[in-house]
Image: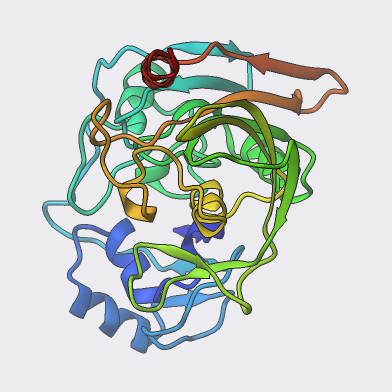
Length: 304
C-alpha cells in the first residue's frame, strides 16, 4: 500500500499519520513496523517520530490483520454540481467531514461517495480517503473536487500544486475590513503548542490569500477570498492574524455569536479548472448557503 502525504499532513509524526490510516493496528505495533523497515518513506527507513513533508510517499508492505475496519457505504444525498467520466464536484454541506477520522467512520463525504460510486474512486490516499484530492473543514461548506480514478487524481493534484485552479470563498469576518482589496502574504505552519491548529510563523510554508471587501457593517464585513495557495486552515489563520477572524470561528478567536454557535461562516463558492485530459475550462459558482444568509440578514437587521 502507498499513501501520499498532502499539505494537510505536513509536520505530522509518521506514527500519528499511520494511526489515522491503519486504524486496525495499534500505535505501538505501527512503531514496531516502522522500526523494522516494513513501513518506509520515499523507500527509506525512518523513525516513528519522522515529521512528514508534502508529497512524501509512505510505503507499507502488505499487512494481514483480523477484524480489519472498513468504511461503510451510506445512502447520504449528494448535491453534484458537475460531473464527467473522470471527476465530479460536490457542494459539501457544512457539518459534514470530508473523510473518516480516528473517532468518526460514518456520515462523511467518503461514506456517501462509496455508496454511489463503489470502487470507481481514486485510492491513491487509501481507503479512508477514496476519491478525495483536497479537503474542506467540517464546518466549511461548498465546492469540492472528487477524482473517479488515480490518473485523474494525479491530474487534479498537479493542477492544485501548480496553482492552476482558481478557488474563491465567501465569508463574514469580525470587525470592519478597511481596505477594498488586500493581499495577505504570510507563511503558515503547525502550532507547536496546539497541534490541531495552524499559525503564522516565520518557518512556515508560503501562503497567500487575496481579500476583497464586499459589504461592511458596524461589527463585521462580508468578504470574498481568493486562495493563491491552499494551506490547512489558511483563510481562518490569515484573517485571524489580521484581527478579523471568520464569524463564529471559535478555534481561531472569533467567539460564539447569537446567530450561529458552532459553524464558521465560510463557503467555497467558486471554482475554475481545466477538465482532466482536455483544454476545456470549467467554471462553477454556487449561491450563498443558508448559514451565510442567516448571518448576513442578522447583520443587515442590526443596521436598521
